[in-house]
Each structure stands twice: as structure tokens, then as C-alpha cells.
Image 1 (cartoon, one colour):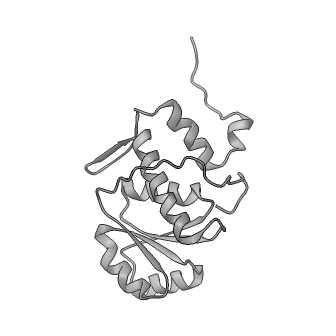
Image 2 (spheres, one colour):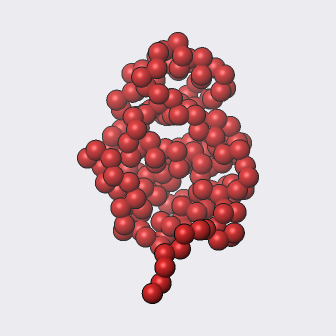
Length: 161
């Protein structure tokens, strides 16, 4: 009887998160990757959404590694945003929408993020936080954009992202 594999091989350990995710998504494209609230996305759907967001991040910031702030509810779109940020070699800063404006403003200032990604529910708060100081990318709840780009900058496994 085959026993389940309990430990990752050294090759799997020495991969970046985006590379490992791409392998899993290719193998299990139709399996459920994330289920949150009314959203249930397959690996292929999660990959498509994260790639579409990744393209928008690259368009706004370029390839340099830097922080990107996320002001989102803890749901499927947050997972897609985290993957998108990592796919383009950036570092994500997840902000808690329940924190005070003062705390969020301080975290944004300390991080030196130039981009804030917000879901629909938090776009109003995000607008007041950015106030012309940084770029805002509001992601609608039903966000899904076609993505033809599949090659993103390679993120080494030991990179800050």
C-alpha cells in the first residue's frame, strides 16, 4: 500500500512560492484551491485571477522588489492578491481593515509601499488612506480578467518576497 508523502523533497523546498503554486495549479487545475464565503475557486481560477492582478501590479510599479499593501477581507480575493504580489517578486503587507485609520496610516508610512490594493468592501477606507500619497488599485468582488502573460520575473526562493 502506498503511503502518503509526508515531507517535501529538497527540490520542492528550494522553490519560491509562485513556482511551487504554478506546479500544483498545473497538476490540479480543476480541484478546489480556495473556498471562502460564496467563492469557491479551482486552482486554475485562482491562478488566472492572481496573474491578472500581477500584471496590474507590474504595470504600476515595474519589476523592482518593494512592498505592496493589501487592505482586504480575509477571503478568496486576498489569497489571489498575495499570490499576485509574490508572483512579481514583491513583498506584501496585509493590513487589517479593523485597525484604526491612524494605525493603518502609520503602517503604510513605515512600509514605504507605493501601491495599496483594496477589495470593494474596503475601497472607501483605502481612498482616504492613499489621499494622493500612493497609488490605489481597487479590485471588484467579481474581478476576473483574461491574462495571457505567463512569465513573470523569477523570484529566487530566498528573496525577501
